[in-house]
Length: 295
Image (cartoon, rainbow, N blue to C red):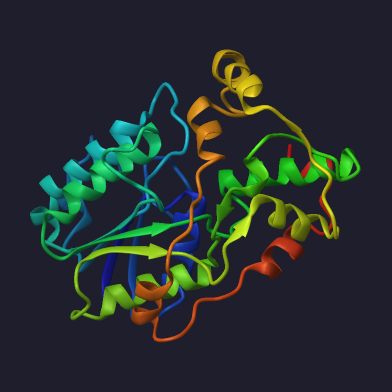
C-alpha cells in the first residue's frame, strides 16, 4: 500500500507518519515544504506532483491554528484542497483522507473553522474522500496542548486560583488519543467498503476545561478568579491579538467558549471497539510541569 502524507512534519502529521511507517505493508512517502529529516521536500504549490509517483492513498495533515505572513487560513485549508484535487489524477487517483477539525462549518463565524469547513465541503463533493474531524489530539507537540500547559503552570503559580474569563471553565472538549486516530487512518487506507464522508474523531469522555485543569494539576478543587468576559474580550481583540498574536488571537479567544464534543459512534463502528479514555495522558503529561516545559 503506497501512501503519501502531506504536512508530515507537524505534530499530528509526525505521529501519523511514525505509526504507519511501523507497519510492514505500508510504503510511506512523508512530505513537507521544510527540509525536515525523514521527509521528502515537496511544496504542493511549486513542485511537479508527478514526482510523487503512483499512490494508493493521500493523507492531508496540513493545517494551521493561527495565521502568519506566509500562510493564511484560506491558503492552507481551502486552496491546498483545490490543489490536491487538481493534481489527483497525476498520482494515480488515490483515496484522499483529510485531517480537518471538529466543529468545521462553511458558515462558521470563526475563520479557522469556516475555512476548514469550506475545504471539507469541496473535498466531500468528490468520490472516495474522507474527512476526519478530531477534537484535541493528545500529543505534546500540538499548539493546543502547549497552550494548556501554560494554563496548568499558571494554576500552580497562583495556588490553584487561576484568573480566567467567565464561562471558560465550563467549556467542554473531547480529547482523543493518537493511537485511535492512527488506527482509524490505517483502517480507512485498507478497507475499501467504508462509506466516504466525514467522521468525528473524539475520545470516550468529554471534559470541561475546569475538569481538565484539575486532572492535569492533580488537585481536587479549583478556585478560579473569574473576570467578566465583556472586559477581557476587548483587551484580547485590541491588544493581545495585535501585539502578542503568538499568545492568543481573537478567534482563538472565541473558541475558548464553544463546546467541542461529538458522538463516538461513527468512529467506533469503523474501529470495531470502543475508543480510549484520555485521563492518563493529562495526569502523566503535566505531572512534573516546570517553566522550561512551556518556554
